[in-house]
Length: 325
Image (cartoon, rainbow, N blue to C red; front, side, top):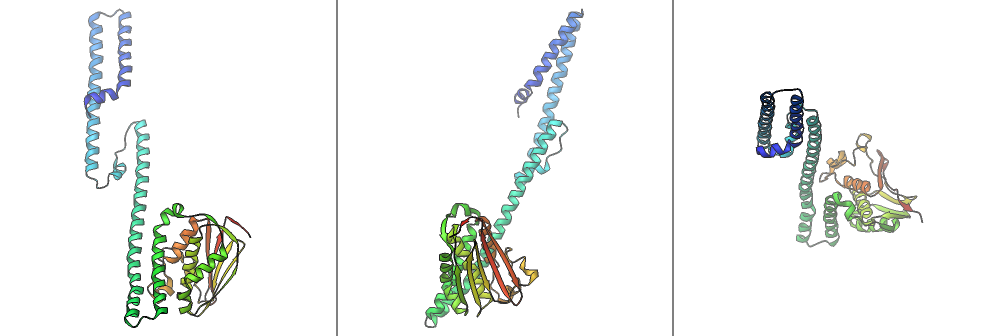
């Protein structure tokens, strides 16, 4: 910052000081002061103003140099607001509080973005490892004559994993990708069962579908969510029974599997939570119910899980915007 720029920035203050100098001259002149005294007083006044201007300019330059040094020493410039020295002036303190608030907001957003990036990288890494299982199985099946049913089952697993990571990537842009329209829930339940038929047959699970209503939303998202629930049924309750029902704006998926312990039930929709059953089976990312729950939250739906050990698990998906048939 040049001295001329600083003088221009102090233009209002200098104008008032100039008016004050003129008033002093007028007061002395009408008071009968001699010209020499008047000149000496005006000279002293001008000298004081110039000293104040030079001193304040030096102080401002020193503060700017300190800020530049702080900025150069920071790897992330948005942290500068946390290191600003507290000012002394009342107006400057207000600016200081605003800058601190802006800085903290920027830090929170950056930290959230970093956590999201780390979570995404971790999920992609686990997804790659899990994806190797069906691909390896497909290679072994083909090397041993190519059983069609087994091959279709492994391809379905690979397709489910691919769909999961696609929906996970779309969570941040769900509003842009979602197509809202009225649809029959019965048709969506049938499509979800059909899409997971290979896994359900291999697990020896019998499925019943009952009821219908018209919902307003993205039918593909509901198909994905129901598919994830059926995949969990195939994984955790082989040989069991699953009932899909639709009534009064609620879709329910109920199984007669081993159930979920109370201390784990409140965490089943947390990101990466696999639970005791998931750890025992292995190869679980704990992302299926998390993605399903996040999609429901973004689509005016509520996903609720209830369960009792030894009696099975029930998952309800409730729509807030629907028209009953």
